[in-house]
Image (cartoon, rainbow, N blue to C red; front, side, top):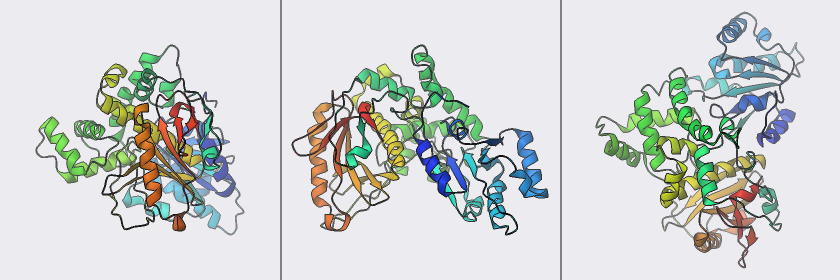
Length: 428
């Protein structure tokens, strides 16, 4: 199976296949998990096919080894539809009479629930990879002239940015789902419709998932709308609930109901919160331990709010927050390729760092995000202020400070050493 996009996740999959017998690739529906996995698999079983799912369950009951037969690596699409399947490879590896060198790839679009979490706990030698929609570099909307890896190596940056505000508004509304990015020349209107149709499809499909939390599509629409209004903020559950009550006058909407539905969205990999970076500071400073709310792709927020590029251009505050969502999506994809994670920082004095990329070796970089150039100076000063607060004797110096921008014409290094890089020039 061929794909028009070169996925950054390929690097992680190649790396994991060398060290793990079982890889679980998780992510939202239609983000390209199965298409990407087929690049590596030599045999496959599609469990969304009812016959295949029934036969697999039958073989697991009769002779589990038969369910795993096939050329290695073997791909099982949407394994959560047959939860017991994930235990089968471990049984095979535990069988001392069998010398097994087979490798297996499992994909999932719905996270396993707590009542089945013992399945995961029984697995040894298993690796998880999170896939997301396309980054701007993967969809060829970023030149990729500035490498995140190069920033960690303190190298010079050279890149011109061709993206305008109009371009960014379109890219936010289009999103990064592969089907929306396929026909760039003739399918702009169709691409902009994708996220709207996607929400409907997810709502319908969620009725058949294993989450058991999303039962009312209308309530889900309310939550998507309220969550989208607080994107890129640390809004509490009560704030989001108040937004729902204000908009829809549903006085029976309890926090318990809200939490259950938000968990359902999380299980569908549609929301992805940015957690606080816990680091060592020189003085005792109270940090605000609240996650920042984001969708896995900004187009979901656009569809939930029923927006289009023209409307986005007229609302600067909303544009800025959705631009942050786009940047955090891309930073997560790029950081994962370097074995890193993305966090945020905020203290009681509202000193903010939008993105902290921390690699597995402990090195880290600090990033602030702004759409317009007139905010670059303030964002850079915030980074420098945070750097002074960090106890570098314990965690080391940050490898770089960067202001990630929207419409800056080119990448450059300021006199104070802070990188300024447009999102349209970044890659892993």
